Image (cartoon, rainbow, N blue to C red; front, side, top):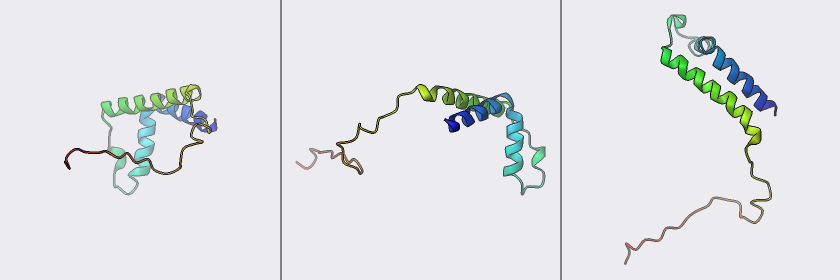
Length: 92
């Protein structure tokens, strides 16, 4: 519940102020470079960041309403990897 609330807040903040988020992440990621503040993001990139964070906020809102598997569903199944055997007629 707390993680969903955090993701909703981060999603809204990123959707409303994508330039601030890009500037902050650019300063952190490009700390060793000489002039990272001179870099300007393209408009399509700002739009993509805004859309991504809007989707994060929407996902945080609808996540509680999505069905989740119960713990009893896989009670009879063996634990471990599932391997499908494909038989081929090429050996004949």
